[in-house]
Length: 122
Image: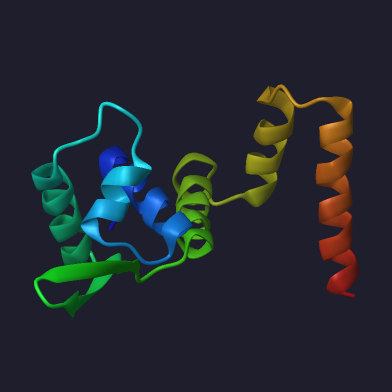
């Protein structure tokens, strides 16, 4: 189940912090900070979606991610390829390289990364 943009923003803070109490999460936001009730609602929805867990310390909860950022991103890139590029990584790569505003050096770095992966599969 996908996270909403507000949930993704909160999840990014949680991935950065690794573990956090409500105060830590509020401190991670720039001004104007969201209300703690807003964060509580988001955290509850994220728990229901199995993205966030918590440990109780007295009357406080320490939250932590149940899924890594890499795993979350991988699922969504794979869904993007499936839903918008006919399940074709080649179509995705073609679109990605043709429509992006990458510099020649950035494209060379991408190519080097692909070449490294190809060499590992040999």
